[in-house]
Image (tube, rainbow, N blue to C red; front, side, top):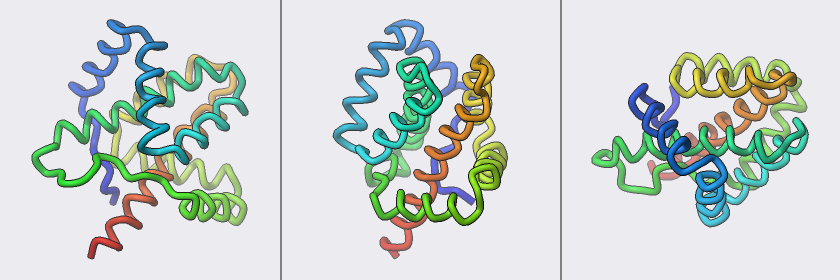
Length: 164
């Protein structure tokens, strides 16, 4: 069970319209600025994944939309929120995920994360799948989405433990 916000079809449509109206580059610039301020570790992970896939600027648009969907879904549930909508991924969490990937292998890690994403956040999964399916290297793009989602999920769980 994840504590990350669940993206609705309406939220997905609104964010898609925002990207269409403002343009992907403008949206990505705004999201990148937010990530630099609020979640630099996650931004670094996204940039490295995008560089590994190739055509990094276009891949970053997909990762940015993914993050924006989660932010927008958080804001939809703002009456239930008292803190920043998404957790700030720490270096400690990133290191733990690297160990998990090393121990289990990247395929097993990705499969588990994608299954969790599909089960807990189907609209977000639909966006990730739709975006990744436009690329020859579908698997590596999906691995990036899986890593970003799992990073936020693990950090949210860790943060929740410290609050109790």
